[in-house]
Length: 313
Ligand SMILES: [Zn+2]
Image (cartoon, rainbow, N blue to C red; front, side, top):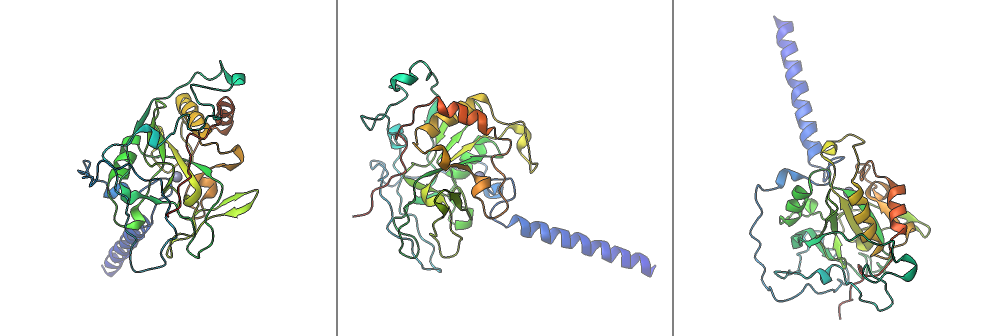
């Protein structure tokens, strides 16, 4: 009898330990594959009241992050009710820049792909301004990089999450742009703003290790100089496995189309998995880099999508 009681107590203790470990693991900012913690996601979108619907989001940078550990920085961004497509992609902004409608002569006839584009602005708690100086007062300027991701969940669940206010900093996350399975492009954060796409991260390129420390309590990251693009994951990839069936041809075409418009050279295009220093990120899984680069070569590079912001006066 005593042995049975002992066995029952032991089993109970093992179960309890397992539950505690599981809960603690879930409290990390991201799980291994999931891009964000969807447990806080509401069933329906919140009613977002914009305080000043007539003002476009200014293209200003912030000067320097605060070193105050006790006070959470409050987002000062007041979004307008509607943003024009020009706010995300300044087509033809430079007379010297070829555009999809005005490709250079040597590419004419090769460029015949135009994706559908739309805007769904992320809630302002989920993005911030790019900084001119880092936490220590040193220049935070780095040449832009493009970081590729995948949503793991559906595009709609990702967009709903970004539109949901997240006052708790550890839950704040966003991409600049998302590409759905049909190749349609959704702009979420203006390119001159800092999307919270990668936490603990470093870009190791020809110039050495690049990262910017912008928060006293979090590791340095690439967010201050990154443009984050995410591909919607296929339905067979919504788990933690290392592979899935991959992305559609339309997604690769749209990705090449949008990356070319950042003007970022191939040497500065990377993935979340490569820049990640937390050991938890694997995305984008099953990504065909050669297909992407082949399509990228067919697109004229422009500066329509620019991460440049204007220093505060
Ligand atoms: Zn990612």
